[in-house]
Image 1 (tube, rainbow, N blue to C red):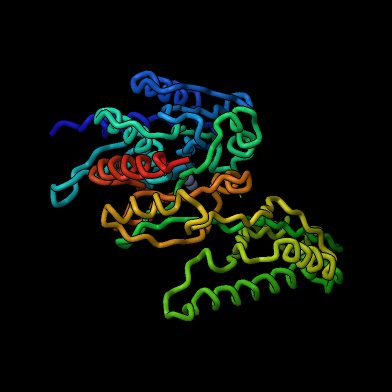
Image 2: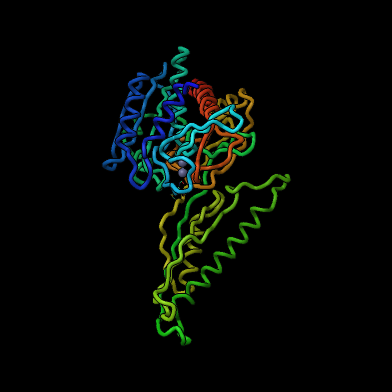
Length: 404
Ligand SMILES: CSCC[C@H](NC=O)C(=O)O
Ligand SMILES: [Zn+2]
Ligand SMILES: [Zn+2]
């Protein structure tokens, strides 16, 4: 069977190796330039850090004076363990499903989040083919480096005069696939806190009772944070008052992700390090939490190094105070899709948009789909790519026609 043209273009996009830590951003920018040309869209590429382009494709609305709609996606993807893949991750193989009724498109970035960026452009294409226009100008924004924190991408872009010139009023960004029927819609995020504790102490022969060692200082800190982890896990497992299950975004998670110490088994190490990936739920008092970590380090004679810390808890209103919400909600409902509102468990570039005052919703139009972002054999179904295009055509029509 012939490959539908929108799927062929998706495969082309997936084949660009925008994989961290050395993404082919130039190849990606040129692909997007080609798309802009085909679709008659405005094209801008800005490098706030050399070699890391922020690309903006613009479809002008009939009332360009109104605040615009930003359709954001990141172009980078995370590394792969190639030996665990059934097909090469940057070949974007199109493989018939067992029942023969569909195809899997297997590639790194298929879910996270090239399907989203691709569907934005294809939705514009479909709307253009139907002769549709919308009131508000629509900008499809393609940013680098989200997967490593967005510091050289969206963080700089939102501060730039070029971003201000977009006059953004509302944004869409990535979500996560849903294993159920409902569409997961993210209106806020947990705040990342990457804390590293370093302890120093006396060394000596491993056969002796050496006092005041690095490990003795570090272990009680690890114990205390692991106790906090158990508390939060118990909280997570406790159903809400209405009997519904808690979402990960409703609690603070913590994992011990780095442990470094030791040189030889019979030498007491001079230093020991423990690093934690903590994701604070938006109701946390971020400053108090940070102080608690500092106090814990001081109490046990260790040093605290904060590697990442986000301290903004802005969420996007999901009620009529945000005029784009009812339009979005109705356009989803009109497609017979139920919505589950959630706090995003990890961090995306939406946090920079929200902090800059732009209401943003995180959505990935994949339902009844295994969650494979950052996993081996990431794939999407061809039918979901085609459905995703129509999904965005209707969402964009709704939010970009919200009157001024
Ligand atoms: C704290 S910056 C890291 C951002 C990263 N985003 C996607 O996975 C994350 O770990 O959530
Ligand atoms: Zn992503
Ligand atoms: Zn990711």
